[in-house]
Image 1 (cartoon, each protein chain N blue to C red):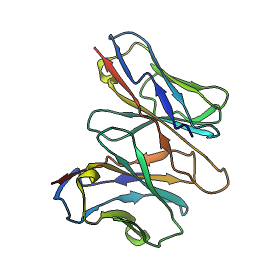
Image 2: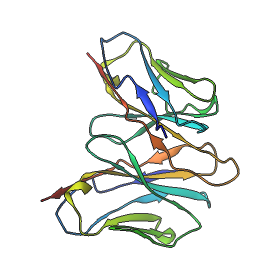
Image 3: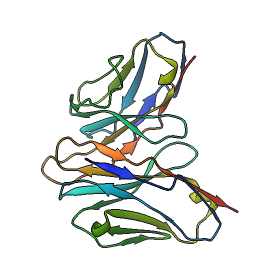
Length: 115
Length: 117
C-alpha cells in the first residue's frame, strides 16, 4: 500500500522559531519521488521540493531544509527562523513508479506563525 | 508563461443540477490531475489523464462524476445531479511525465469552489 502520513494537524510557533513538519511514507517500490507543497491562505498550491529515492542528500534552500531518511521512511521539512509569511498548510506527497502516475498526498499540516 | 487555469473560479448551484468544471493545463504537459479538497481537508485524488486517456479512475466518488480530456489539452470534470456533499474546491494540476524515468512536480491551478445549495 502507498500512504503518506502527516501526523501533525496544526502547529503554532512564534516568529523566528524553528519548526519541523513531519512526513512519513509507505511504499514497496524501490524507486519513488517525494514532494512538499505549500498552500497559503490564498489557496493555490506551490511546489517547494522534489526528491527521488536514490538521493538521500539533505537539501537546504534559504530558510528551508529537508531531511530525507529512507531507513525511517521519513521526509521532514524544517523552516528556520520562521516568518509570518510562512503561515500556510504544507502537504507532503509521494509518487511511485509502479502502476499509474498517481500522486498520494498527506492530509497536510497547518502552520501558524505568530508575530 | 501561462500557468494552469480553471473556470469558473466559483460555482453555486442547486442540488440536483449538473455542473461542468474546466481545466486548461500548461501547454506541453501531458499529465493532468483532478483533486477535490473539502474545507480544511487534504487533497483527495479523483482522476488522472496521460494524454487523452485516463488510466486511473479509481478516485471518482460515484458514477455521477466523469471527466474527459481532448487534444491533450483541456479537461472537463462533470458532476451530475449534484449533492450538498459535493461542495468543495476542485483542483486541477498538470505535469510533464517521462514514461521511462523521472518525475516532475505538479503545477496547480487556482481551483473551482463549488457550492451546492
